[in-house]
Length: 324
Image (cartoon, rainbow, N blue to C red; front, side, top):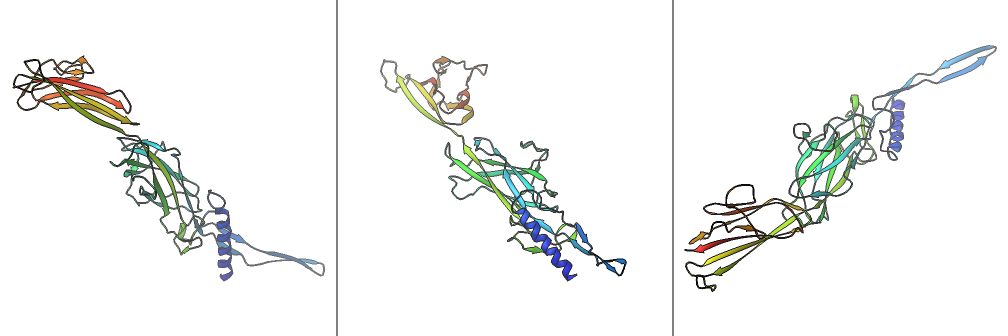
């Protein structure tokens, strides 16, 4: 059996050489029994003879290799909602095994670190996260068991932090590590492989890592408010009876979109709103909650600007109150 074990070790080393040059499953499946019997033929006198050796059996050990490939090859735009990054994890070893999946948004050199919202197995492989279909897993949890040469898609949904700068790119890493163990190539895990064979760390160290990127697509909204006064005497003195016209300018910058932008203002104390004076970009708005963008209540005004992309023309809201 000593010779048999030595042959087993040689077989594992030979498999390891193949794994170093290919992402495909490393040769013969783990647990396969390779048998060999030698034969000698000779003649004694005029009589031919045949002699067979004992049969030597070698059970192939499991070689642990994995590759992680980013299927998201260009930076994904990340704005107000989560950005989805897609990775493929492939078992490039020769035995069935699971891999512990770990996301890492804190990659060295990132100008900002995103926040991972969801790590999920893409059950139907469409590259889109679907609640109730795809399987959410905890960071560091195991993938399904993968047969040799089989793959699974992994989704990472990540959100921008408040300090992200428009146009800046940040990476998120995904690492898949053999649930059996990792280490330097050749490290042995006795009896841990398929069917109880030994498991040997292959050329990948039993783990793989890949990065995908998001690019911040942010809309920044600034409001600038001003007031003009017209008193009953034709001057700009803020006395009782003077009318104050408030002007609010909404300015949007960046490459993203401000979704559902609403400008609202409350009527100041000691003033009375002047009905019918609300305008958007010089166009009159009704005070009622109807089909136009504006509404005036007993306490203030509200104007819906909708979805506004960065760099769009400014929007100006005006209304008037009288000092009591």
